Amino acid sequence: MTAIFKANLRLCGNINRYHCNLILKKYVNLTAPVYSSVNAEDLAKTLPDKPSIVPQWRPTPSTDRTNLINHYLKLSKIRLTTLVVVTSMAGYAVAPAPFEWGPFMLCIAGTGLMSGAANAINQFHEVPFDAQMSRTKSRVLVCGRLTPLHSMLFAAAASASGIGILYYGVNGLTASLGLANLILYTAIYTPMKRMSILNTWVGSIVGAIPPLMGWAACADSLGPGAWLMAALLYSWQFPHFNALSWNLRPDYSRAGYRMMAVTDPALCRRVALRHTVAILGLSAIAPMLDVTNWWFLLETAPLNSYFIYLAYKFYKDSSSASSRKLFRYSLIHLPLLMILFLVNKKKWFAFDKSEEESSEAVDEHQIEQNAAEQSIR
Image 1 (tube, rainbow, N blue to C red):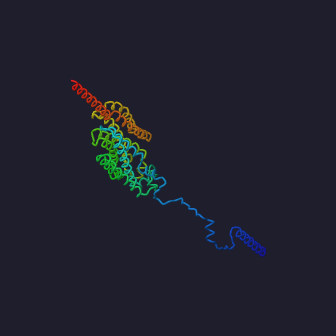
Image 2: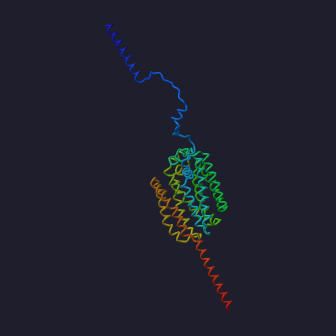
Image 3: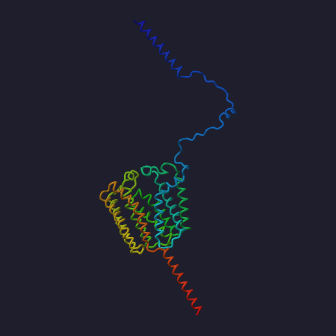
């Protein structure tokens, strides 16, 4: 029995050794490598050009130069900058002074550059906080498509160009307002967003200055109509931004921003409603200040009343649907209000100038006739 068991063990060992040899022969190359010398000239003829392989990764942050203009537009927050420029255009058009295309275009260029510079500085300071918000995590500085140094050089060039255009091409008052707004937005409003809910009030002042810049560019002064337009823009900011921030409360809370919608939701709703009522009252003051005719009050009444109605629904319901309706209507309300302000402008300098020229021509013609009659006599 013992002899049979030993024979089986010997047979199993031979079989395992056989299988190991088969595996080695199949998967392992046991032949020794053959070395041969290669001529460098023959190799150069065979491979004349070595292909350059572009790596699929790049260090971040780094400047992506493939789409630099698009990155600059995003860095400038082009939609917000467009709104700023449009409100300055409205201020220029409503001002009681002759309309001149040169200063008008220079005001647009300077205001746009100043706004783009302010937004670039704002994004530079808020990179670690923007990275925590779903709405802002794809911004160019957060994604590393531009370096912080590159963005600040862009902001410096844009702000210097904007101030130069406004000062030398328009007037000193407009340039001073633009510089003050740049400092207010970047040095006060931006850090205050993480300190106090008063940042919303400061931000509303920032939004109220562009129509003052347009008015100053046209009239080289600030009259009652300019301050009325600024007050309208100031009040409009609250229902617009409070409705926007209502659905972004988780993002603002995660990033540490102290917004009314996060820290005091009841105040957020009340303030939005109050300022829609204030817009109705300010619209009624416009004809009293002789800035517009009385048709402006009648035409803006339904526009402002529906604004108040949506703000009241947001105040009572405060749901995502009501806040979204209020925000979307605010985007329609402002341009319509500015158009009605322009259409019902009390003093049209172009028409007044043509009437004065025609009256002067009539007077000159009458003087010539009288002189001819006296010569005949």
